[in-house]
Image (tube, rainbow, N blue to C red):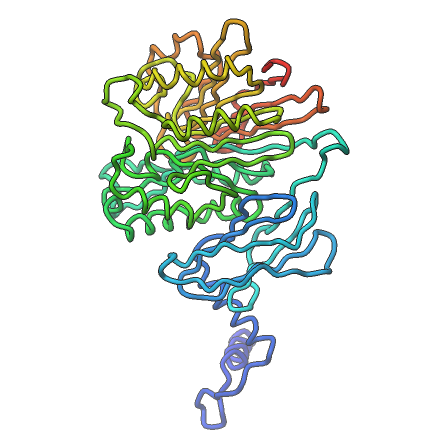
Length: 462
């Protein structure tokens, strides 16, 4: 009986009634109204917040709402409650699929910050850390700081109504929790970051819906919220499978890419190529789709992969760069000599030109990071009179796994013991004094278990 009376009392307290037994229209206490409003704003959050690029004087953040709303980021230095700063406020709208880029520009170099997402002026409570950092001003002062970053490609998120019949192609979404647990400084998404489908390829509505669907994966949100993110694309987030420069909707997928990612720059008006720095390393995010000739075109000088404009920019930028490690990031494999699938070797004329130019210019410190192949592997190309070229392929994150062809494992470039044929991600660390920097490469499975590890000294790439 006591339990029944207590239950009735709780019900009475939770729903006010007037003297006539009707629900009263009494005003909620201020604290209750604020909590209710905050809950309503949380419901309007579609995906994010995501931490984008980091520089010494600014950091870009991103968010997507479900409907039009005023959004803003409030932030302060970790360990200090004041001063508190606000980004620009953005009114999300249907035309930009309710996404917003929010600039934190009242920051100092080498600091860590905590932040809150505000929707309609109310804080959105999230069950995981929301934080970002600025890059260090180390030049002429100290050795470059150590850092580490995650890499991965091929993120397929199932949608049964429009997926092909049969076994689901995507899965293992817990990989994003394993990545978050490693606490990388940043993440590089190396292509196929979403998979557009038949229902998406011909309309802007379809493309934006697919980008939204993938970005809204719950398991992905903690990683986005506390790790800086950079990206390039490959065929599936660019267009249909094996899509090339002829894809009719590429201006729309480029618009979607720029709406959903926050790279610090785009060096051409067309395509997503760009670059960024982290401490003493430079990353070149290459676009292997916008200028690409069809795969079945006969090889020769006219068969573009990166294309003349992008190739010249890359060679100039590599020559200009003084970075210890120069990471060239793109979708398809570069070093693997097997002329199969969409490997760069099927564009042999341009590939030979790139390798020759790197040798003749005596550019040190170059490594390739690639994806696409739905397995991870390390290739090493020995070159006469100079250092070898490495190509680390990391794939897939959540797509299905694929085996390499048997002849690929017989190539002299294959580094024995580096093949991983399960869902996985890469974790790369750069450390050591400026005159002896070391790159450690690890590949971990979807649960975060290490599959292999290799060290590579900067002195080996000179």
